[in-house]
Length: 146
Image 1: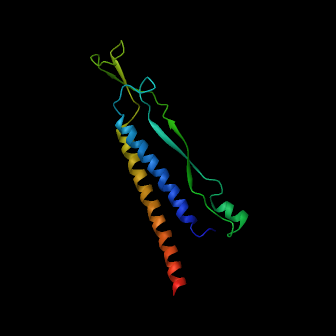
Image 2: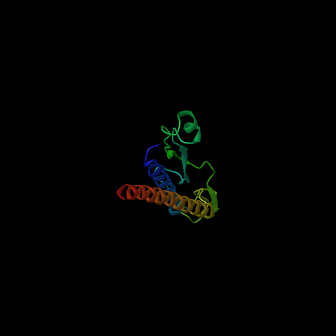
């Protein structure tokens, strides 16, 4: 096991949760956008995470403790939520369809707030793991000095 692999694993979690938080912020910012750069209405974006290769106790059992190295998490892609857009009747809106309905993004503010809280807690947990790994490394260095 690499001496500082815990720091690398926690750093990958911090990076992933930061991206998740950025996507939540982007979704909230565009919750009422009726146009997008690609044309049509904005679609909610969600990250897809995957465990990096070699992660987990299974690889430890196969290779033994000396070769185990957890790799953390990676972002596979940023997907668009396939849910249909919200329709609001507002015939005076410049983007209203001929029937008077306006298409708004499929962003639910409450869902985004829940995702934001989950990302925040996961970020805090990864930061606590990072801090503990750093402290353990520092204690090991201090032990060598004595």
